Length: 465
Image 1 (tube, rainbow, N blue to C red):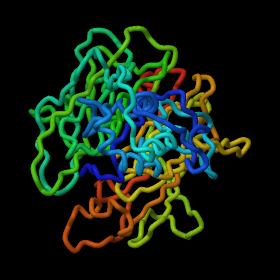
Image 2: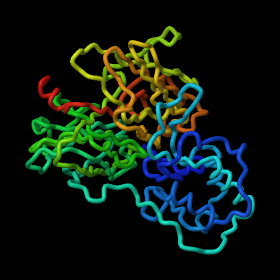
Image 3: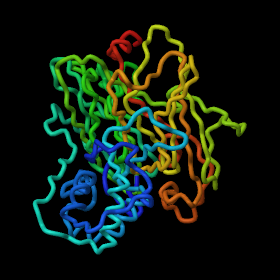
Image 4: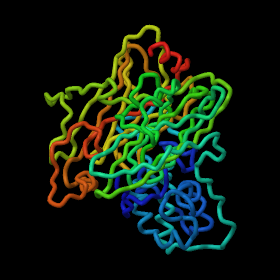
């Protein structure tokens, strides 16, 4: 994976790290209808909201490539910052209210600045970026990490990433706990983000992976750990931070079990990279009231391609298409003994050609459609987990007779700024037909759904396997 740090995609903030939790979608809007205030200064007016919304990433030691915590730093980059704020490309938070989607609730950790804040920044730049009277700097938000993890699991040995094709490799890491524990938070710490495409962390309650690994503690795998009794604990995609489970929930990690870290590597430029990613875990020894499980909606996981009027039911993106759409659906399922699942979070996932995703759930009885997320400005390098800001008992549900629909839009032309990455910089290469596949140069249409369950899914899986 090639990380891009260009002016049009400056990393002004991470949607999972920023701190303005009080912002709602009603506060975000065009700035041409909002006038900035007069006589603004850095210390009184600009520094406070940049500290709240951007310094979670843009501070010394943060995940962004430069800091935005001093007057001098911001003044030197002000024109580019202004351009990114007005364009809406930064802070990166792509779940939006649109004509097609009114989400059921606001999302936690919405990092976007309000229209008034953007107008104030523009006015401050227009007035010459006055510093004002120095005062104590605003307190910076702490970078979002698990401060005191119960375990930090490293891949058992450094792994060499080489060649020209994507690599899917699973790593077995035994848990050193004598009692059952219940996951509360998970943080993936990529060692080499030049080659790490995404990471899935799976529970292995029976330590089945012990029979699959080589002498270095790993084995080749696909998008799953290649055994049945498992539960998806967490997901890392570019731009992600700590995955914290909702209060009162957890995921079971059995005593004497293992965790399987499923790494998707994308070699860059034919060179060799070394990776030894770590996973930090925070857990409780008290059983939760509800349990968390992640489910992937895409072609390998039971979804099907739907004919959207084109007469085509195959997943094929033609060359030159700037807004090609694929429609997937999952369900309805007909299992009487399962209760409704509650949906607490969703992460859209596509590759370099993906530009937009819309995910809805339709009630099988009434036909009512609920929008879960619309990401009309999807970007590969910022694949955010969108978590509903709702009590557990008010979350949207998915049950018997319901179905979830995923619409993905792709730009397979040179108007796509990521086309060079898609073609891996090959001289003379041109866009071609693209199908679904595991390679980064293929495409996906994956909605990663975080579910709240009233039972421990490991018990159900035990009965099945």
